[in-house]
Amino acid sequence: MKTDTEGMLARLVLLLAVTQSVMLVMGQAVTGGGSWRLLLENAGISTMHTAVTRFNTVIFLDRTNIGESQISLPNGRCRNQPQEQKATRDCSAHSVMFDPSANTVRPLFIFTDTWCSSGQFFPNGTLVQTGGDNEGLRKVRTLNPCLASETCDWVESNSTSLQNGRWYSSNQLLPDGRMIVVGGRQIFTYEFIPRRAGEGTFELPFLRQTNDVQNDNYYPFVHLLPDGRLYIFANRDSILLDYGTNTVVRTYPRIPGEPRNYPSAGSSVMLPLEAGNNYTDVEILVCGGARFGAFHNSRAQFGASQTCGRMLVTGSSPQWAMEDMPTRRCMGDMILLPTADVLIINGAQNGSQGWGFASVPVLNPVAYVPGNAPGARFLTYRASTIPRMYHATAVLIPDGRVLVAGSNTHQFYTFTGAFPTELRVEAFSPPYTAAVYSSRRPRFISYPHQVRYGQTFAVVIGLATAPSNGTVVNLNLVSCPFTTHSFAQGQRLLKLGVTPPVATGVAQQYRITVTAPPRATVAPPSYYMLFANNNGLPSRAVWVQIS
Image 1 (cartoon, one colour):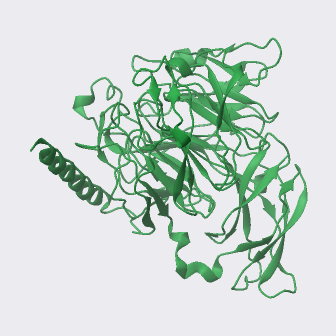
Image 2 (cartoon, one colour):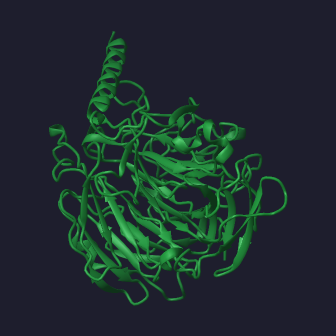
Image 3 (tube, helix red, strand yellow):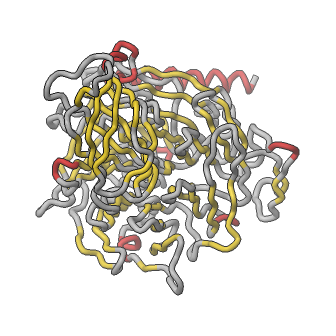
């Protein structure tokens, strides 16, 4: 009887969520566009951290201290971890590789706890994963990605470790190919991987200054600017850091409204960088968050923030320009789409991050169109039927869809009651993926697999419908971030310099001359997805290494 009651309660909560979601977008710019598809009923784990590799596979990573997951390690392998809180002997996997082409998963092996950790790709495509909790606090793990048919796996370093134990930190790939790791729970420093001989940690008083009674500076938003310095946002404040000299060179105005970082759970992106202004104009967008006190007074279920702040951080007198989203949202993920728009997806309308601290899921994704006039920048898309709350993730994959997975508002895996642990994987297809646009969607015929900074190179694209005179098909580079807790670490999009398409002499094929980013501060050396974008209709991406 108890199980039936819990099931009825869960269905009622979801019905109310759908109804309220529909009501709240009434009167807004609703397109009803896009579509949802369930890809996998059970991924085996509820992913907390997600990253896309250059082999078109996706790495899902949970924490280890939940007890057994829903997928076993292969060949009878088990993890014997005496420091583990829940199960010192565990024969289940807590990381998997997902193949979107087949909608299958392969279990991966993690030895120490990765709870609320951070990560980033090295220039050679190796996924580096740092920190966690308990025995994982100082650990550095690597995964050299491979094809879905191969057997790559996580390797835990015995020679490299973090100097500070880091839980809730943020990583950013740097122009020299190293990685900076910033902050963490009660950690007010940053450090580098790999570190130079004799190099220690570096104090960052800004992190201490932004720490309040509910720790609203976890997972700081870190963005590498094209001048090589770091924009860092925590709580409601932000700075420009010259990490080479450990100098704060600029302090920005405080954003109006609520706290924006964990546990208040806003999100942030650096808006697309453009060759048209020599990659010099940089705007930061911060959206959502939770009312101060929502974390400590979770029963009150305060309404989340409905505002976004946008600021030209390279301007002479930067100020936040505030806008309202169609609905309140905390725990939303912000994804740079290949069209250079921003998708805001997942999250809740009330509460904050934490175990069961939020309610009223936001089921409709919205697009933010940076080039539109204020008041006309948001489009509301078709709703999902699956709430994605605390510990949900979203990532862009090469075919232009957004992969959505995870959501666990419970301390352990719990499959009853409101917002049960979510093992399903789904994809949101933005309107540009619709079959009706197939004749205008470009495809790559030829392209270089590796380009140098400042290099001029050619790509050949296929177009079933000939472009009109003067049409520009944009070429956009999109990085592969490490996504967790509503922030995509290392995310950036570059609109490259291009010439109009010229017919090659082969039917439906056109050559475009492209100029690569000028230097590593604009695009750190790495693998990027390259999209051809024909008036809002992007191709499937190809992988290009910038070096």
